[in-house]
Length: 332
Image (cartoon, rainbow, N blue to C red; front, side, top):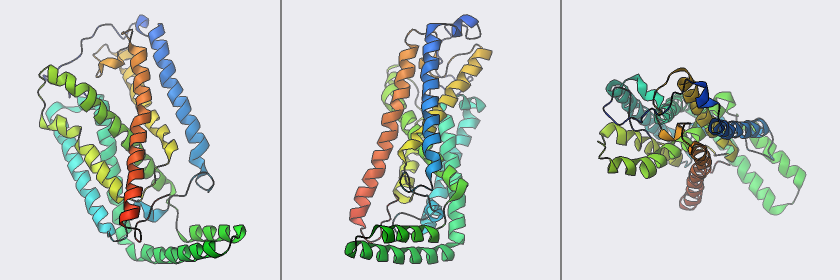
């Protein structure tokens, strides 16, 4: 999602049209309206986090994330070691692309949202590899817990089919939750990074391939291996991870996706308030009269990008529950 990997690259750079270090650049209706869009998204995101993130213990709002769901594949026939191998391969490949990108174009690549997101996905697979390694190391313990929970599930379903007793049904659910160990803060952080990466990857790749790429093709831009890889390998590995893992996809976590982008925009504003340099993405330039429209459109794009990945999750549940009805474990 960028035109150039760094200041030293021979790639195309936007022209600096106004001095962003001057007061007039920021004290106008365009900057004010853009600030309203950014701050509004941050406020909405903060409300969602405040309202829903603390409800993990409340079954009526969202389901708990259990520890074994961090490394146990969604289909029981798949051994957890295969998920470990996949995460390790993904981490090594993503890290390799990131290192090559830095060696070729320098540290200036982190001036771009694409590299921010790519780095986030790399961190996700690093944490996932460590969690899978931990799970495989303690596999015997968690396998015993899985057997106990499966037995409880069978008894629970049998009881529901024969008796319509609300109190007993609630006690069975509570008993199952006491058997399985919840994920804790690291597990929740892992899930948050997964969902933030999902939305951000959809945003960067869609904007690049459907908006920026046609423009670059018209300008006879030299498409290299690294540029193409940075906008494709991330979503490939993330979709593979999605097909294998047991993580759920709570809708309110779009809040972190919004905050992630908002932090990047604020980072760019601080940089440009201090130094008069070109913008990595032309639509971020506040000197344009169309800037408020661009900022609003990009903000609204977060919704379909996040929803698209949520739809992929639903398709996964739909297909695997029919292909593997006896062994597929659908996360909430």
